[in-house]
Length: 476
Image (tube, rainbow, N blue to C red; front, side, top):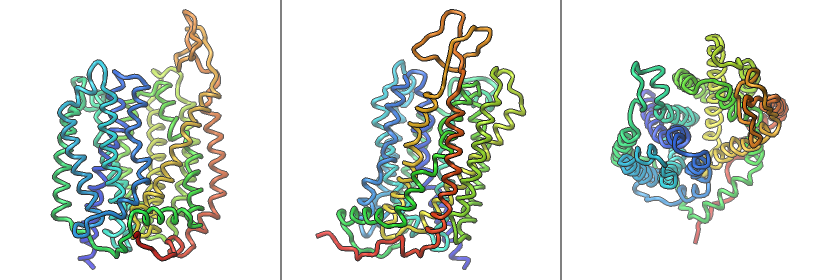
């Protein structure tokens, strides 16, 4: 018993490290780099750079290939993890030789940065498919629900390590201000490039992969399996939930932080809240994993997290509304309230993510683990992505601005093409944020009621109902 536990502990640590190296490029692409290039780039340029994240959105397209092509003696998952991590590490080392030149010049070379990070995200998105599938066989059956805990902890560590804002360092770390973070971008990339190469060598030489039953399915069969998974009644029912469950709090996810900054909340204070929340998220991910591993109804805790997230979204609306129009008058009590709301919301988000991922791992067929989990993750990610465009559109649509005399107005946003006269400033009369927020929260309550029978059904069906029934044929 003790030996089994130590073996699983080793596997858990191994998975956390593999997920951590995923968090490095995604943290850079989704967070740090846009802020770094913002000084010398337009919003259009930043929008172009956002294309670098597309491989994570479309990785489902090649996940059957990852599940079907491999070197038998090397291992199904290692056949992809080793070359992808090695390519990413070498690319990091290459980028470290001219990182500052690309990002701090008079005109950032957006095209080159986008191509390089697109390749980097492509490598790690492919690694993600293989790691998700490996987690199903690396962990014991009784501990497979901990895979999502490993993912949450690893990604958070990776994201957290990319926080290197000069403003944050000047406000909370340094006594003498500087224009750079604690470490230069080139030094950061060089360190992780070396780490990737060393980690890849360790995985290739010292980490054995357990051989699972193989049916030698070819690429065509692998794609047919993916279609068959989507045709399963329970998967179709669960897909409805995954595609709609973010609607209730999508405004809190996408708009609330921007609205706070727009009203004068400092970005370095937001960064401080992320820093404070990090250890709590780490511990909460472990707690959520324990709850999921001991529960036969994993999605019941997910449902409680959903309801709590809706309630905290209501608190978030009042937080934005109660922020003083003159941000110089913000009191410490307000910052404390913002910290509590942010922390609780972040913990609920992590709790839902871990329990949802645990359910993914529980129902996935290990024969096509990478494809199965990638399919479910793609549905979940798309459900979190597509509403954002409409939310931003309707927030803007229902917002009314006007030009007022300087003595009566504070600059909160631009008035668009209708510029104000001399002595006037733009002010918001009616903020669409509040209308859209309350609509989405009410919609979330309705969805919560609708989800109850769906969750009861998909948790009560036997595990065989999540697998493909027909016999697997081989490609000619």
